[in-house]
Image (cartoon, rainbow, N blue to C red; front, side, top):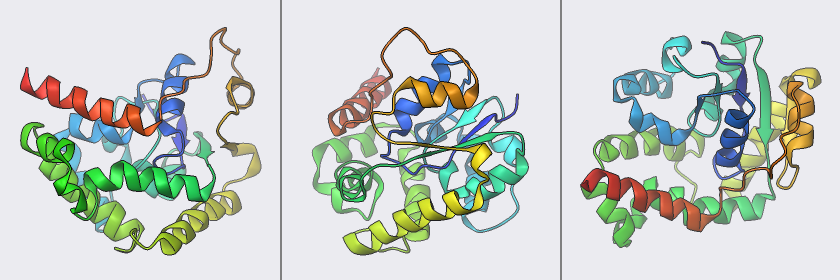
Length: 224
């Protein structure tokens, strides 16, 4: 199995909904940031990528037909080169709303430690196996790497987000790229992939309440 779809959109731009949509359309399994914990043996590869070292991307995504969200989105260039036949999808949303969503979810969970006072974060870090390692990696690659240690600076973070999107738009050939905004639904995605439109609503899975529900579910699973 090889990657057929590369998600270049960063976290909190509808990536989990896109994951569900791609899997419904037959492009699964689809790798999402939450799956890093499912493959602890691949963490050294991600660490190497964060250090700018050469990485066997086929090994990183072995068993997956698509990738969305961080950390893959941070490496869309090498992924696009490694999988030249894969199509690229850029999920985007209003920059201000995107920042607020990230701040209230994944930054609180994996960011600079400011979320330690949140009982949901503290419990998850105490209970979920490997979460401490994943959090350290997440900080290193995204908060210190992608955002240069300045995500808390709203203006800086938004500028980085907008620059990322602009680079994808500029560098990926139009015929290989689809830009997906909230509310786009099935039609543009299915037309881009050349598949039929399902007779069901497009998935909607990315609101902050759902994020914390998934954290609670992971904690409950770890306790069982």
